[in-house]
Length: 178
Ligand SMILES: [Zn+2]
Image (cartoon, rainbow, N blue to C red; front, side, top):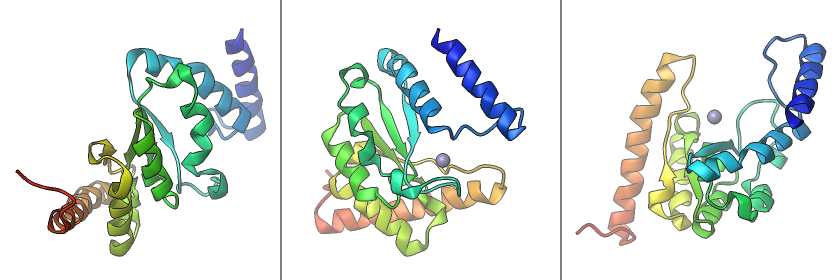
């Protein structure tokens, strides 16, 4: 039944935009799809990535704070779904770290923050993430697409920044190497 409703809404968006594969930014449709499908990753323990923080121009950054996901994280149906918060949730990086420290199924990916931010910004973001989030729940993807340089810069800067932050953590005594 709900498939028909989604199809109807999707067709409406298609007609309105005139695009064969329109970008889905219809809030209620996205909400509905996420709520209807999140039990699948919960059942099969397949990670689901949710874009949070900065990204595309059509994004309202005021609504991109991952703390807005609390209703979903508190829902017993989805407690076993591994949820990956992407883009380091930048400008809400510390909030993302907090969520990863409290909810066992929350992870953070700092792709896009690297290589998009300044060197200081990249260092700060990774540093902020490991302030509170368990280090084993912090991960990285380049989020590279279209432009080959992004793959190179992502890998190059990702390693460099991570190395520097981990070096500092060792020197500060936050990380101990046995
Ligand atoms: Zn992304």
